Each structure stands twice: as C-alpha cells, then as structure tokens.
Image (tube, rainbow, N blue to C red; front, side, top):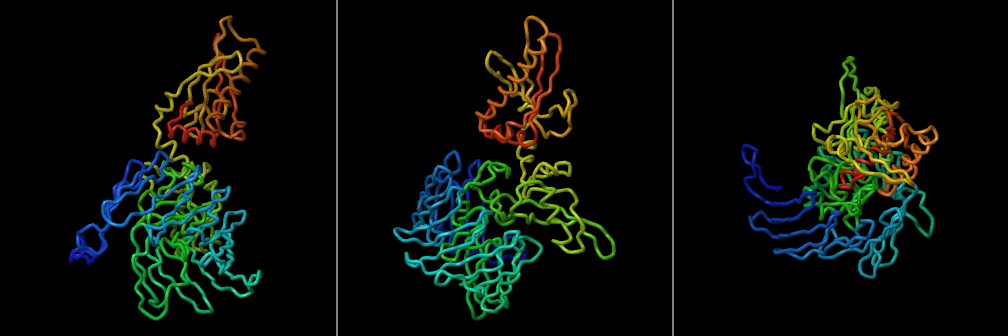
Length: 503
C-alpha cells in the first residue's frame, strides 16, 4: 500500500512532482509488517521499518534499517498499550496507566506526570489535568451532549469550576463529529471538513491543515494572523489531545504514528475484524470510527418539498448505543435529528467498509447494529458449522451432538430461513426401548446441563447460558433433544468458532 503527495499531472491521474511518500506492507490480519517514508520526495527512503506482532495483534518489535529508532510499545494483560511511543517523537514514549474499565487515566514521561483523565459512568471524559513539568498547571472540565459531543469546556481555579466557559463547540447534524464552530473568548472560528471529516480549514483561512493517511498532521499552513493552539479537532473530526498528540476517540485512544488503537476493541469481534487494535480496516482515507467501536451507516428516508421520496445514508450517531439497529437508526433518522425533510429509517443499515456480500438487509434489524451477524453468518460457511460434532457427558448420561446453524425455530421440526439461532441436536439412545417419562425428563435436563456447561467452559456468561431452550422428539428407541440457543448466544458461538474454538 502506498501514498504519495505532490503536484498532480495534467491528466490528474498521477503525481508529476513528488513531495512526500509513505509505503506499508501488511500481514494477514492487517498489522503493519513494514513501513517506509520519504520525507522530502527525493525518491530515497528516510525511514525504513519492520514490525512484528503477536497472536493478539500487539506490536512486539519495531526495528529500523534507515532512520531513527522508535520505541517498541508494551502492553498489559488486558491488551492496553502501557508504553506508548510519542506521536510527535516516537523515539520517546509515555508510560500509560489504565483503570479497571481499560480507560486511559494517566500519562507519565519519566518521573513526571504529563496528564490525568477522569470519566463519568458513561465513559465520557469529564476532567483533564495538565502537568508542566510534573506539577499541576491546569484542570479542565468537559460537558457533553447526549450524543457524546463536547459542547463546553471550563477551567478550574482554586478548586472551583469557573462560571465562564473557556471553549464552546457547535456541531452540525450530518455526523457526530461534524464540527461547525469553536468559540473562544467570544471569538467564533469556523471549521471546514473534507469528505472524510478531517478538519482542513478554519475560519477565514486562519489555517490549513494537511494530514498523512493515518492522521499525523503533516503540515499547517497559516494564511492569516492567529494560530491553532486552542484548536482541538483534527483528523476525522476526532479530538486531539493538545499536549500528547494522541486522539481521544470516546471509547478508545488512537495513536496516529503507529496507525492503531492503544486499546483492544471493547465490543470484541463484533466489529467484524479479527484484529481488535486495527484502525478502520486499514482504509483511513475513506473510513472513520467516531466511537472507537465500529462505524455503520443508517439509511434514512428523505422527502423533498415536492413530495419525492428517496433515501440518504447517515452515519450512526448514537455513540452510547451498542444495541439494536431499531434503536440506533430510528434515532439517527428521526425528524428531530435531521429536520422535517427526513421522516424515518428505511430499515436498512450497513457496516462501513463491508463487502457487498456483507450488506445487512432489513430483516436483520433486531439483531444488533454492530455487525455481529455479518462477522459470523456471512463469513462462516454453513457446512463448516454443520461439521461441528462431539460428545457430551453429564453424570451417567452420555450424548452425541451436532451444532446446526439453520436451526429449528420455536417448535421442533419447524425450520427458520433466518440463521438467527444455533441449535444443538443431542441424541440419546436407550437399549431397552423407549425411555420412561421420568428417564426422558432426567435425560432432557442432563442434556441441557451438559450443553450449558460446555459453553460456559468456553467463556459463555451464565446469563446467556440460562437462556437455552429445549425441544424433544422421540423416534423408536432414540430421543432427540433440540437445544436452541437464542440470537445472542448464537452470535457468541459464531465468534468463538471464528477464533478456532470447537464445541
């Protein structure tokens, strides 16, 4: 993968005069295995790196053949980056501390604290303490909308929050990070964003900003008096921490120089990516991830003044909603959110960057808006799951089972065309003929316990395991128990299957 910056040719299909170039090699799960950079366009690499990643996609080594030696990140057992190369100078690093919810709460440089962060119960940043050098120099409080947009910042003095706002932000309706205006000391500066929501121009050409593909600020070009010291939102509209250069993207922190998140994706593999540290499937010039979770698009019904009805795609704005598409998209597409020209949600949503075969159609609307169905159903061949067989033992009872992805729906024998459940067909035979009513009851209960115990050993929570239901069918000497796993358990089973576990 290669990116070039320079003067376009007359045909506007190539670079005729090169100013800057970057090149990446990617491994099978999207980690950078090699990285090269030509800083001045002289066709000579100024930086050549190789990188090694482990089985959980954590960077374990950064080695260079040309250019400065970068710090190699380190991680804790939860997958949080505890040694973070500094974005402005990767030859130096920050020591990072996280809380029990994997939120970044402190950054240190050597013996000095650089910054501390505090969060509310919804994981929103509410207090940031700045240290320079090592001593507390500023405490800043943040206030947010319900959609997790910062609308006001106030400073603290003498332990009291000042009554006058230090900064205020106005947001548009097109997207959660659609920044319209920043107000400082009653001065309004307006932001202009490109198609990928990068802030590229401020006010009356106060400044222009040029980015590298993964978000490093390549240059700022002042065209008038003023500076960007107080400007907070840059790449993809994300909030850039002014002292560290890290992007604070709601649920996670993004390191642009490494091109990856410093924490694992908190929704696991539900985003449809086996690499929980990777940034937007390595398509940073086209995709964004405003929540640090997964980007999706809701298709909204748009009605013109002439009465013509069409559909318009809007990005998911309900950042605190990691649940049903009916909840998230209905809110995004409401007239209250988008104006009277938009009437409702069409019932369709897509995962940004998904292949055409992964498109989620309306009947999936109740299955969650974060891509679980896409990652499990569309990417696992049916016959592979049909091949999942084994034995279960519970007490004196022994069973053979088969996991079936197109299960019985409700009553035994009624198949569903929607693979929203997974059933375990558990077969028990009795040499003496039909089981008695009591024996059948005991067998059914033991089969349920056996399946539940098997899944819980693989990591299924007790709350989900308790939602198993069972059907029973008798044929001669054979009893067949169809143990049905409802939708959330089915999705969990699929993700475990993708990780190579067998039932």
